[in-house]
Image (cartoon, rainbow, N blue to C red; front, side, top):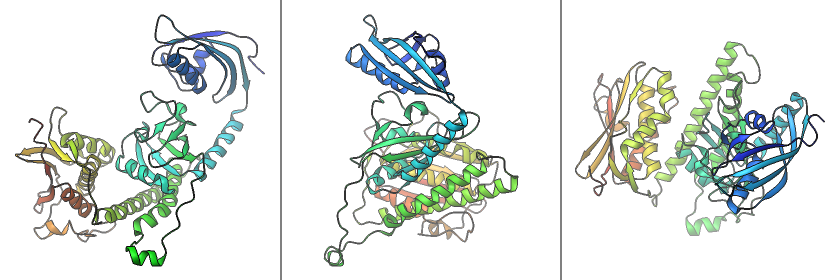
Length: 462
């Protein structure tokens, strides 16, 4: 043992459970684990104890444990609510630290990660700010939330889950979320959160892997319908629902492994192999996109398909779409001119469906526009109609091509661009389901103007 004994240090928290004062060695541990000073308490066990003491107004004492890259620490923590404020006084005694070899810890952590990847019911690739990039799901009770998270690409994953004991503004530092318990809409099970940081030298600088592992087995499902049931009810199992969960997991694993190779996280690699891994990841992402399109296709073609209309702002959604696809545009030197923050275009539509349409339109514009060109997103209001226009400087469309682009599986002879020919077809059906329309105005050599029209929110003043 090193550092053993009755060493005492003190600290102080505020009404938001931030550590605002701390003696050594508590201050150093707070910073090593990834917290700030002042900043939200980064030691999970201490944070939970302080939070309970503050909420219930009780003096609490308990042994706490923590671990960073080089030490395992145990200590006795005594927490007392501040009678003259909203925070707590913290007293730490019997601080004991056990040093260990870093290589052994890395091996233990990687084995835990491998188990989490294998058992995960839902996995996601996140960006550096924990925003959703891609989702895979292989358990029935998470299909609903997986669909919502997929449509909410670009938002923090914590917007879609309820985290036990985490009532602070989300997302928290990843070390505080790793190992926490989550409740997910559509599932009556508890789920353990595993966050795997990517990137060097700062963990998480290249994003994260998110894996949710069930703490309880799923209840036995109802028996599948028999052939007689199918004949009597006309029940058929949609192709996308059957294949999507089966395909997403292995494809997402291929993408994740290819990205690991491409970014050389597993070690140095010759440039040609790194480029090859990038091609594999790109092909996998195109395949995932096709799977999503096929799933959406079945949804929008159902006779009972309906949207959930609400009051939305088309300019806000246009700015969100531009933000989500900003990196893709920058890679090709394309400038996206989005509506200004003070512009508004109130409309009636389903938030996630309208965002889905705008992501498709803007994604197509970026894909087919020349490098170093410009794309404009403009909003208009015409009586009872609100519209958003996506205009580019691409090659444009012939007159006969303007309706063809909205046909199912139509790609106008393009090959090798990774498109499915379903995006515009699905987008138009979504627009019409919301009482709107999707059209295009274009001419050869003059770019294209895709126009999404929706009912205006007439109760909102211009």
